[in-house]
Image 1: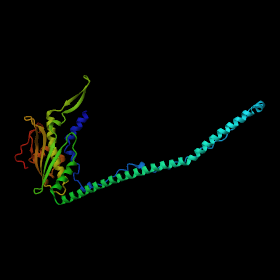
Image 2: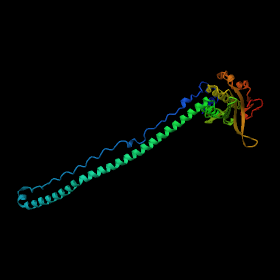
Image 3: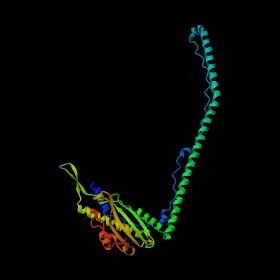
Image 4: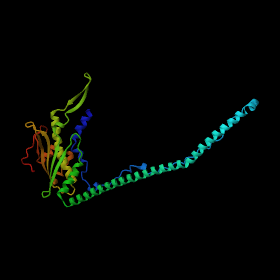
Length: 338
């Protein structure tokens, strides 16, 4: 539990450092799409079933004569009975022969029925195979068309970007900012527009409210009570961490955009960092601006952000910064270029 809290705190403390070793430039050619097709989902339909083995005719029944009576007495007095048994056995054998001949006569029909059933199953398999292949081909064509349309859109974006279209520049900025991964404990959102005449990006960043910041410093086990107790961080620690995080997000965003814009289409950025809260006086949602700053590319790109204190850098840039972001004190926008 302590390690989890420490990890969340470290993620927030390193919001700026996390982006400095990353090249934020996006090569639009790398976004080209190639349709990827899954394997055909019904390989079980592709193999034909072997034809059934012919049904062999049943073996011909053999005549089994009765055992002759034993001894001399049996031969003298059992002759008549023995001949009756032979006659009965022959009659039974003839009946078996008749049944056997009927079965043998039916074997070709049985084999034909087997072949017809196999042929029907094969026709059903082939029909199902054709239907599955047709569906698979349609889905492949749809994926190919989606990839083609995506690449056509990408070609359009690249061409519009070459011609300095405002919508292309804002789309590229959106791609850059969407690649900027923030910790789950400190998500941000962006809203932006580009002024072509001024070559200025107007960027608004939404950050989490102070109440979402970790308020536990660590956990410890109290043996006498046999329980885990949370040690709260001080209000000063939370206040300083939040103020630094807000400043870090501002510098991080400026850095990412200027670094990604290798063709230097954006000369300046008018940036606002804000958060949402509930107005304790009215109970209604309210947006609280915490930082407003105008950044010039030529000046900002000379800063070595790996060795700065974010709040000091914003002060150098004459930014309007909340006196107490943790208390949701809004900035005074007077004197800050919009």
